[in-house]
Length: 321
Ligand code: UDP
Ligand code: MG
Image (cartoon, rainbow, N blue to C red):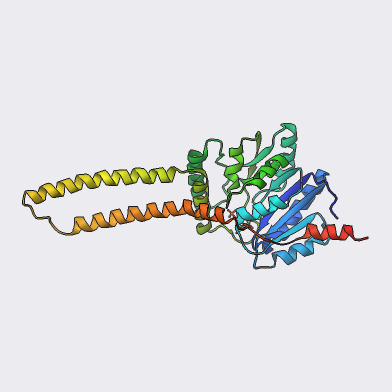
């Protein structure tokens, strides 16, 4: 049974991690036990379709600090993380992936750094990503370069979602009303004092990545649209540029018509229609992304629903005589 107060919560979103979960628990537990602090592990099941939840429930039988928060359906990594942060009770909260790419041994260092340097955030910074595929490294490099430019220089290009946060930070995050928050950008933008702990990104212990290209693109669109109106401004400039180009081309066409020249062929016409149509569609789509966020925010629907949280079971057991 968990006895509050909990010093440390370890939050782990899991989506179809049946193959990784045993390895994860086997490596995480000794690390946390050695810290000699009251802790909880919040395993958030993000609507897995495999046996992740039932395996977690089995593991819980002899590890009472393992808490299972099961979501009703798959809502994606960042939203699952949000569910975990909401559920967490610790004075410090660490978010970590379930596939052991983030080494649990670093958690102790993070906690120590937070206390020693009296900071609210400790980032796990990847000093070596050679185990990631070249494609992952390239796309990640591009993503972080773009975000540094859009969000600000305080976004570290090697900090993902492996980090420790104090309760103060988590409380701020839990109050955010925005749909689909991208924590790796929001946390540095809040301005809390921070420290960094380097680590080597390991290979996924088992199973496959749950971040296919489509999810990476979604995360990028969310990242950009939640932090910057720059694409909208770019659309305005593009529109202005096209407009002036059109004015010039119209003048040229008129002059040639007045001079009695027939307009040659349809190629120029065809290209102009396609180009302008393309530009318009992209700009409308861009606008749509922002409106979509406003729409989602105005509906105010819950980003996730918790099917069950084993902490509630614990309380029920304690309450019984
Ligand atoms: N994850 C999740 N929901 C999803 C996709 C991923 O909770 O829809 C979890 C996944 O189980 C893992 C973490 O997010 O714990 C990071 O995912 P993954 O390791 O597949 O991403 P990668 O390291 O390949 O970027
Ligand atoms: Mg991974």
